[in-house]
Image (cartoon, rainbow, N blue to C red):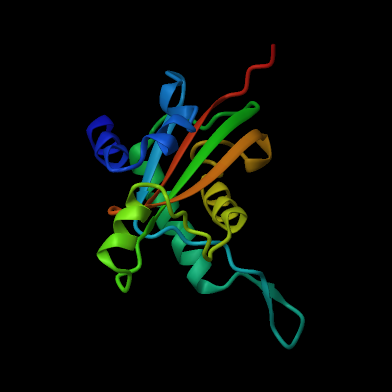
Length: 163
């Protein structure tokens, strides 16, 4: 797991990796969900008034949960937590080599959909009963979007300690 994480992080700009507290915290649990990060879609409503989650969102949540279960066999945390979520987005193929290099160097950030809060919502909901009992336990969190050659969502969570 450490080798895979190092592979993802080695291609990111230093400014991004320095902003992540979870990397340096020995108590942090880490989960890597490969693939382009997705955002949670709005709930939909049938003509009869029933509310449901779109199937695309349900599918991504189930996949993220399955990956997390395979990577984190420990019992879920049941106390307040801190969270770092890193969404590594793919660089658009239509970009020039120069613009692509700037994006990979961290000079251009992905101010594109999905919104950072929708990404956090999807992955936090997916990690319920895997990393934590319920995502309401997250009392301090950060969501960062950046470009990279290997798209993924990487989560670190650890106990929140107050002075």
